[in-house]
Length: 351
Image (cartoon, one colour):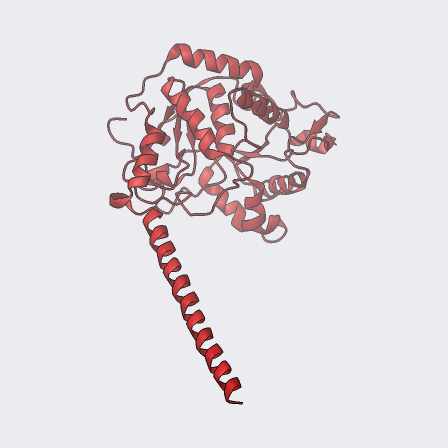
């Protein structure tokens, strides 16, 4: 009996020692991990050495004093027009998509839709861009780098302004992003998440469009089959409420040709971002193309302050489809070649 008590007591002490050892080891490792994480986490501007190194590496080839290279611009633009011709094909018209023709969804190659008389009546008549080339285009992305940039006046000075995915322009953003809009795109997920797929009350949606005036609203009705009915509801809503904005449909043939073109330039992503699509269109429409809000990283390139994903919120984009950093490298290359101008940081008197 005494032997059993001694054995029990010994096991109890051994178990306590083992528990103490495990707790100490785990706690020590956890503190080391916490210190390591804290050390490697991107901090604010003054202490982020890793951020500085990454930024310097990314921006090493960036040409601060930019000058347009007419020869490079003409060569790139000619090649892009030859392969894609966004000037004629970016938007579905009654000319490039006849009544009864079959439209292939660019996101679902095995699905097609036959153009009905009703759908055909919605297609743009004539030329959506008045069959003329503009002098300057501003393509405005929604990157957090635009916050406090004071770029609004410069953006609004462009002859043709393209904006992406129905961004907010008023309530204090005007100074930094401007108000002028000639064409604005819309991701169908916006209609679904913010406006209940327009199956209920629709006035709030229509009122949100007022900030874009009588610009064109570019809808991807034929990218995926689920988009078609939703985009048509958008069109019906605009008509029912008498909104001055002009709904037009993005041509899936154009998107397919763009994907092939950019793959030939080394871009191997699943699907081009809206910003890349609109940059391509701008290179067709305008002699001088300026990009704003195209900085895909979470730290400011000059102040090293943390940035939100968008200038108006921190919602994250679809990283499965898009490769924003790869796109940025190509845009940076075009900037250095004098094909387009990439604005990074604040818009001062020297720009």
